[in-house]
Image (cartoon, rainbow, N blue to C red):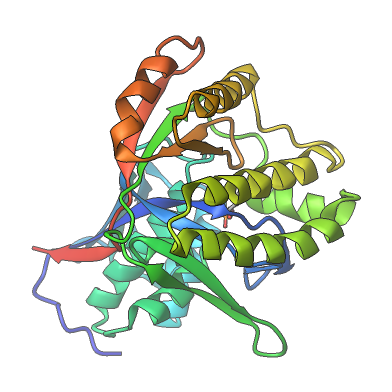
Length: 330
Ligand code: PMV
């Protein structure tokens, strides 16, 4: 394999996190990370992962200033192997990864991390992969990582059968529709059940799982239409339908997966009240108690003022639709 940038000391991959407006939960192939249904996401500006490849150090694997644990090793190894065909324990580099937002708290830190690592390794090995090819590599780390390669509004593409595979494609870029996102952090501690573990349990035990797989396909096609038409009201409807159906599946999993806390519910109620007052706002929640509110930029301030009245919010992170993953070297 050609390494084109031996003279460089540090290669830094930078990628934003993303949230799915129209979600996936459950996989047809766990080893290959292939979801049972597609998803549509938005890239989140300001929520970044930085992955530095240090060419003057070997085998030092660090995440947020600590050596990585076995779970993270397995994830990184899948991405490293997809790009280099080697195991991570043979690496001739140091990897130093950092997130500027809470890790493993339902804010897709693994998505941005794996996307940032993919763009950095692509540069180090001089592979010149296209964004779609890099998305396929990142998907080995987590399915949502495939989406963080691209900026703007992104949809996953799943091929089933013998050579089953997944990657994501950009639907429209970050300038298509200026939306504002308020991420309400209600508990930044690490979630008790990881997404990968949770979705396997749901597939095995939730009575609602099969209906969710069927329904989510319709939600995606109707939601995509609403998005492309910039119809906020319709997009809100499908965003919340997708979120609530996914959480119904989680809650009917055995043992049950309640990712919410009381503040989560307070924020949902607030969003509905604000909407009655004519403010365009919709919410979504992933595998954690944080609520992401999506609105149009003119309404950000009034929503922030209303959030100030709610107990239990640790902090609100402001975001907008961000750009795709990229690399810097020095
Ligand atoms: O692909 P993962 O392991 O990051 O899981 C993502 C699961 C959800 O965030 C709950 C849904 C989604 O589509 O992002």
